Length: 326
Image (cartoon, rainbow, N blue to C red; front, side, top):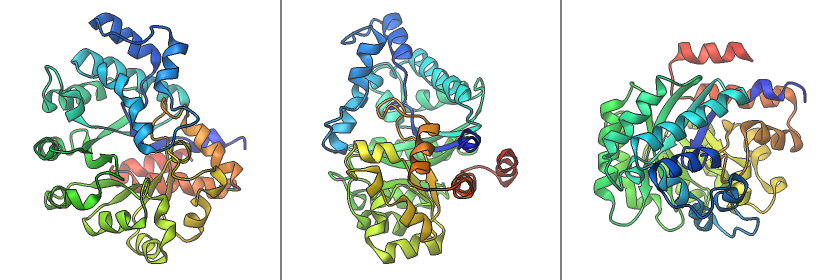
C-alpha cells in the first residue's frame, strides 16, 4: 500500500530502553568508560535484539540489561533519547509517547527526579512532538520506588509527563500486587496505562480496568473473554497492541494467530505500536506492514491511526492537528 507510511505517524507504546540504537550505546559507553561485550554495532545488535528462540516475556526482558547501563547519567539519557527522537523523525513520525522507568536509571548518581528533568530538557530539543509516560516496575520490594514515580508524575504532569504505566514481568507480578499504587494514580487524576493481558490472560485486563486504567498495554488476550471485550468496547478503553513484540515474547505463536482483526471487528479501540524498536528490530512502518498482511484495507488502517490519535494523552486541539495529517 503506497499510503502506509502516511498512517505511521503516532506511537503510543514505545519503551526508551528497548529502542536505543547500538550506535548511541557505543558512543555513550566509550565516553563514560562502560564495558560492553563488543564495540561493533552489528555485533552489539546480537546482544540487544531478541533471539529467534526466545521462549517468553521474561527472557525477552533480559535484552534490556545493556541499554540500562548507558542510561545512568544525564549525558547518557540525553544522547540516547535525542538519538531515538531523531530516528523517529526520519521515519516520519509526528507524535510519540515514550515510556521509561526513572527508577531503573537511578542506580548510580541520579535520582528519579534527575532522570525526569533530563527527559524534559531533551523534549525541548526534539524534532517531533513527544511526551513521556513514567513507568512503575513489577519487582519485589520496590514499593517505595514506585510511589516516588507516582509523585513525580503528579509533580510534572502537564509539563511533558502525561501518564503513569505499570510494566515488567506480568506473569510473575500480577496487577493485584499493585492495587494500591494504581488506585493512587487515579486518586491524583493522572492518566494510567497498564501492561496487561500480554503474558497472562484476560483476568489481568479486567483488574487493570477495575483499578482505573485509561489504556491497556498490549491486552491481546482480552479476546479470550467476551465479557472483557464488551467491557473494553463499552468503556472505550484502547489497546496498545505491538504485533512483532507479541510474537517475540511468545504471547502468540504467529502473526496469523494474533487477534488484531477479531478485536478490531468487535469494536475495540485497537492501536498499533512498536513496543521496543531495537529489541524487536522493528519500526512503526514495519508494524503497519504486518497489519496490512493480516488483511486490513486502507480505510481500516486509517482507522487504526485515528484510534491512536483519539487515545493519545494530549489535548483535543493537538489531536485535531494530527487528524489533518491523514
